[in-house]
Length: 289
Picture 1 (tube, rainbow, N blue to C red):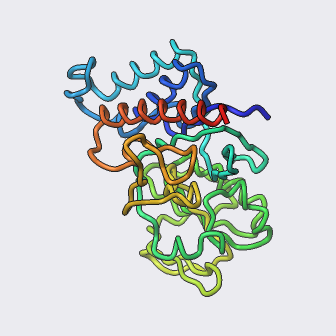
Picture 2: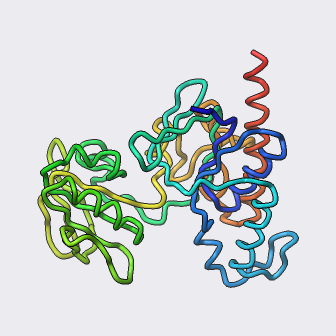
C-alpha cells in the first residue's frame, strides 16, 4: 500500500485549495470527496466577493475549480470516508469497501458542516446497534432486521446490498424524488426522530411510529468530525484549531466551514492554503527527526 504525504477529505473550496497548495509544494496528495464538488457552492445563485471571480454563479465557480484541478493533474477519489484511524506516525482512511484502506502521513479535514443534526440516541448507541457504513458492518446483521436512514439517492445501493444479508431492511429516505430500491427493501417515507434501546439500539422512532430493529444504519454525506476521527477535540460543533489550522491530533489539520464561521468561500479557500502549508512544515520537521 502506498502512503501519501497528505490526505485531504472534502472537495469544497477548502479541500481543493489545500490539494492545490500541497501539489505545488511537491507533495503526494490524496483528495477524497465528491467528483461533483460542493453542492452548497453549486446551488449558489451569485457570488460577489470571491477574488478573481466577480459576480459568478455557483455553477460557473465549480467549473472554474474543476478546470484548475485538471490543469494541476489532481485526481479526485470519489469515495466517502467511513472512518479515520490515527496510527501515530500516519493515518488510515477506510472508505466504502471493508478492505479498502488508504494511508497518509498527514490529514486535512475539509468536510464542511454536517447537513443534518444527529438524532437523539445516535451518539449513545454508535457502535452498539448504530453504524455509518452498511458495507462495513452489514455482515454483523445477517439474518436480522435492520433500518437504513438514507440522506441521498446513492444510499439506495447500500440498502440493496444490506438486503442480501439481512432478513429485512426498512429504508427511510430523507430526500425527495422517486426511490428505486430492490424489491426486498421496504421503503417507509417517514422522518426518524429518535433512537431508543437499552444496552444497544433496539427501536427507531419516527414521526409515524416505532420500529423494532436489530441495527440502524445512518448514511449521510458528512459524518460529525469527532465520529469520523475519534479523539478530535471540538469547540461546540466546530473543530478546535490553532491559527495554523492544527487540531489536537498531531498531523491532523482542519479548514473551511468545519473550523467555524464565517461561512464564506474565500475564507474556506484561505484556510485550506494555510492547512496545506502547515502540513508541509509538519512533514519537514518530522522527517528531520
